[in-house]
Length: 457
Ligand SMILES: Nc1nc2c(ncn2[C@@H]2O[C@H](COP(=O)(O)OP(=O)(O)OP(=O)(O)O)[C@@H](O)[C@H]2O)c(=O)[nH]1
Ligand SMILES: [Mg+2]
Image (cartoon, rainbow, N blue to C red):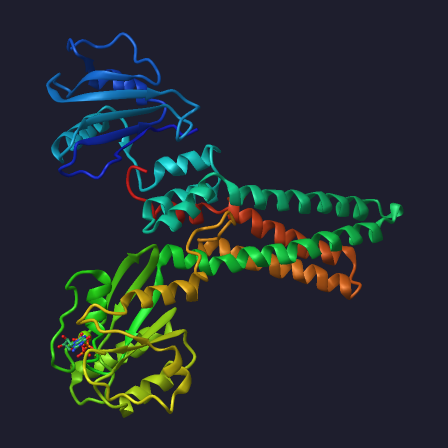
């Protein structure tokens, strides 16, 4: 338990209906008694836990700041496991700020980012994966991403990881006994048990690690770079997908100079779309930088949408781009099909066969693009299944490390290594898994994780 009491505005202050000021800690209730008066402007006899009490908040001079509803949640069954006071005041920035100042003057301090959730973790109510799920829920941009994080908040990942940790721990205890009492000479039986467990764990961990690609896509969106020579309609496509005039569109080739990046959720497909400068050889310094930037974006892209202009013949620029993206996931598009076709792709049979014909001007063929992305990345099933999906890079990296140790154990068994050798890797696997749920994590890491939270959470 912490010795100090923290306070913060938990809502986003602005022109909203209400704001909530939250206090957590052992002085929370005392402070509430100092600042709250009931509807008769009297100090209440008692703030009953889990009731909403109507009244006013007064400052140090007993002057009314605002009309409020206040609730008291008694430890330990609270978000932080400490006493919590929540004050619902009117929206806007003044009331909330004045109430916060008043409670601070009565002896609590401003909460750091994520400090309420950090206390929930440090006081043992939730583990680290659940705390991380809280921030992921807040930051979710798609229904699917939200759904995945809610599962983590329920503790589904922790449950699975903890079960594995328990299994490993039991074997480690066995190994310890063998090492301490070699006269029992049960090494062989223990090693057999270790092998059985690791044979099971290695593919299990692998399966979990593989879900991380989907998790990342749901969380961050499919990084989609729109590429093509100048004037093919890249910015027009960007605007169309965003449903707004975000990028400048003109008939002048070389209009877009810098890359533009936006997140959009189209029928559940999360896209991080990047519009780029048209690729061509140019002496214009600014345009040249734009072209370099466009190509740079391709490197980290999950998907490239390459646009051809159906009203133009195939040109050297198209071929340069095709060569550049040959190792990427690509959707090929032929735009401006409302104009007379001059594009001949017969030397690129495969591209020609899979190409999507569109006319942004006539609003044609755009659903085909979304359907194609859907089938490429989600095999047509955009729903998050009941499967547990890893959506946190920290978890993914620790799972990879743990799997490596498990494989190392199997390797050692294969090579008839001694049991103390095997024990080292088994222990390391367990430690890496422990770090996922927050067992023996360093203070620095905890600080770093909660620093990504918002104030008041
Ligand atoms: N006819 C026709 N014109 C189109 C279509 N789509 C876009 N355009 C026009 O093509 C021109 C270029 O469009 P942009 O979207 O600016 O092309 P861009 O690829 O971003 O061009 P840069 O930024 O210069 O590389 C504009 O005049 C658009 O109105 C289409 O489907 N049919
Ligand atoms: Mg453009």
